[in-house]
Image 1 (cartoon, rainbow, N blue to C red):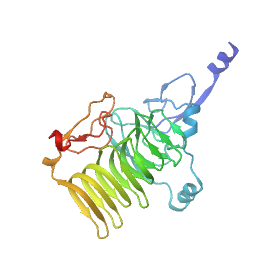
Image 2: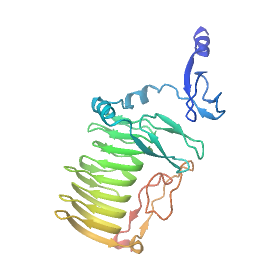
Image 3: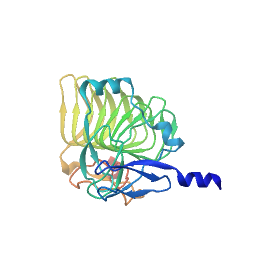
Image 4: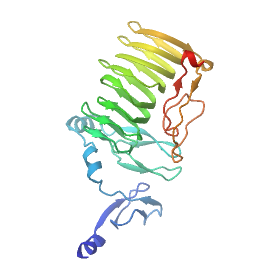
Length: 285
């Protein structure tokens, strides 16, 4: 009982994301109303043991870049209504000005086997020893050096810097296979722009495919446009134009809390947590 009484008296400093006003609130509260601007916002509590292990803290080079170049800004997309806003990279959380949803802006780094759900508008880094099997991962940007066997939705750029097979699904705006990477995608990859700077084997559905100098792509490509720079290599089947993007979606349980983006886009961002479409085989046509 004494322990509960002590917890009832514990306070935390709450910072209003609308006006910056600081006020003390009980740790038992989940939301509060700013005493200055009268806007309601959720309270940030200390992360639990699992979250604390993967929250990425600024390194030496991050601090050095901040001193040399100052604080930068980034584009943040709301997972509920798809509203876009520009915020400082120093911000750890915010409220969507359009729908009022809470948005986590922290960066996460996964260095061990991981199977929990994550939703952040910050960066998700899967380290070389990381092994992600989560079925619901949402992030603003992603850097993948380890194993991805789950499903990842990225509203920005997902960069792969690994060698091996990717058995999981990736639905993103921009998908980049970086230099020295050698990636085989087991599932069909869906994105707005697919860039190859290393080596890749895949079935791709995209608005645009770019093969840079030194890039090598083998597989089937459904795209509206493709650019192969001098020194780049493409080997496989190529289908150009929207009419050729004849795909059969795979059924999956949808999450109604996530926003749909423009229907005209081939697909990026959190679109009902569906897996990338499956291209019909010749014997199914």
